Length: 395
Image 1 (cartoon, rainbow, N blue to C red):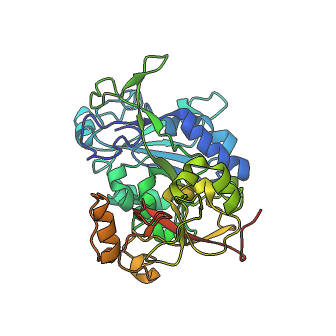
Image 2: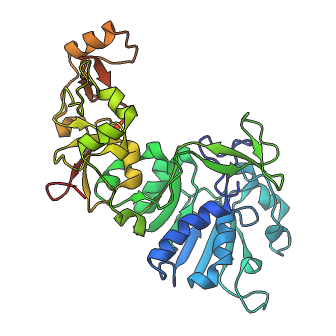
């Protein structure tokens, strides 16, 4: 199950192997190194569930071992019976190889020294260090022990286990860079850390989706493409890097303009907000004291109050420019009840239904809603509530 193969389903699914491209890993890691050239120096990096023969994570850090000044690289891989369908040359060529153990045990690979005497430490020096007692599950005591040894954890975890995987990292107070889906931003296990500026998004964003290589036998998608080298890949929508390692991107201020300018030059937004007489303004929620900004690029510079913005705002979030107040779709702390968001009410429901609205809404819900300039009942997609710092955000 190289490169932490499962993105969404159980890790045992044979047609659920997705391999992160080397170029995507390189682009993300470069951002941290450019911001702090010593970010990885003297550090032990753990790559859970990354088979070094197919994992680009392991290949990348092995190739850059000396440049980054790493102390140690640790990779673990699932047993064949737990999802890793292939046998690696690292394993086969080692005197520790055991065909029976390959079926049921996870594997451990390490890189610490110039094993082959070439004068440099690189991929050729990766050592198969033997079999784990279990199947390589990150929740096992032995992989947890490796977590405790490591300084930084980097990988592409199963999306279905993202909450648990992140908690496993944060419980140990480790630095990390991991892939997840953008929807994870509002998970109750994730959002408080985003709001409190303890976890943020990485430097490279993939709003149009991200390409992942898949095995030759993968047949679960009609959208499989083939690159110039004959490798099969598919595009997965909505991936994001999550991290607690600093980078320059998160300190860049968004370029903002006034409401009037936004509404004058953004025809799509203007059409949504214009009344029958041509007057336009950002709508105010009917059940909360805030305005709705449907497009992140149209956050106004001349409004000091609370705004509801799309979840993709976090792609550009600068904690020195804005405070995150909460998320109405979030059920825990910083959610609707704590924020004081009112119930939708019968008036909005009646107007919404009379106009043919089919969404699942009840008067007791606390989703953010409003009446537009034409008096129509409008709902919103998932929103994050923000406020500009220092009494304004004009640039």
